Image 1 (cartoon, one colour):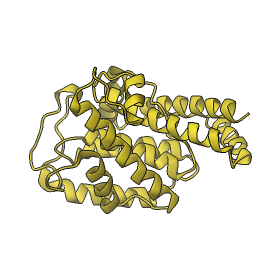
Image 2: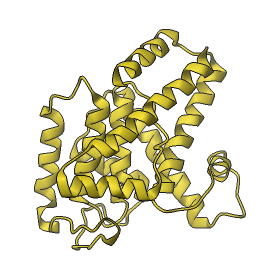
Image 3: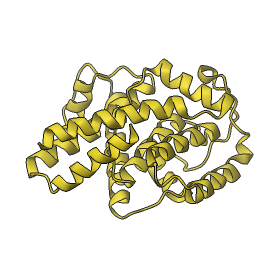
Length: 237
């Protein structure tokens, strides 16, 4: 399937630049896909329609103030990610913190200072004193792992490694999906709607944490990228 994905991306690249109205529509679709899939996998129940209305500046009475803030924070983080991608920024601890600050708006910008038990994925992350070292090792892996021929696999593995570290008190899962999507867009792919249920997503993480098997997440991500490229091919035909 990855060979077909590369062909589709090449066709799309050859169609650029898109017409202004098509480019604007695709930009909105990319943001909506990114936000709605991550919010759904966070266990929240906002509809895509309501997320889109909030993105456009509406106040949606069916949604809480917290829901509105969450969507706006995602928009801030995604804008930063797009700017980083345009500048060719490779992820580092510094830039992961910048993305986290945009998404979570923490009072204090730091790694977690607790040792949680993650019952939904049956996992105890590393002790908080080990997070600095673990994050540096992850970045070293990111910069040396020879997966440039398949950035979709690299994005899936990066997601799983960040989930394994679980570096933040809150939003570690959201940040794992953030770096996954960033690795896609940095390599010329669009952000995608992750086509997994919350249960399927958690089972894919559990599989990795128990056996280091990335394939359940990778297979789903590959299908998501394939389907998104199909949509973009139709929009730009």
